[in-house]
Image (cartoon, rainbow, N blue to C red):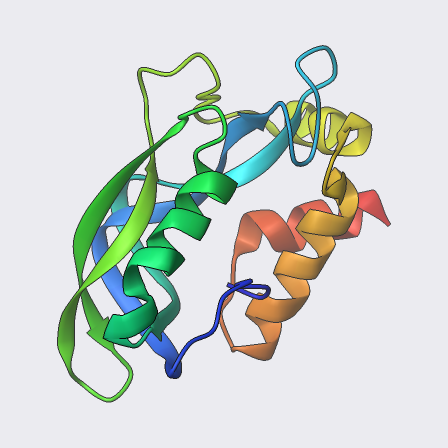
Length: 159
């Protein structure tokens, strides 16, 4: 959301029902290792979620999907699905999303606060420290006027 890594023609706020943002995925690559996992966000079943949708031009759509698969599907912890989304301008679109696979070994589910702090504090992977990921995500959500109470609480706890 805050570092898409691909060219896009349009970016705007989006809202989905049936999924919520959650630190529910053990990171074994980007923000942790198998021995010392971190936590990353996934869309998990239930609730709703405000975020950002990106529109890419048809000529680069397949290359963009390939890039996202290479980045997001390293360990196949997400399911690639299209989710009905309401854009900020009122349009309804089917947006490509990566939803946490509850049957995958890296699915963490709902964790208590002390475990969130422990895992995020220890996590470091090929993309950097897990604390940086949480703080940057919280900061960018705040800039978009999106409140996430878990990330807010965790950012305060991490200092």
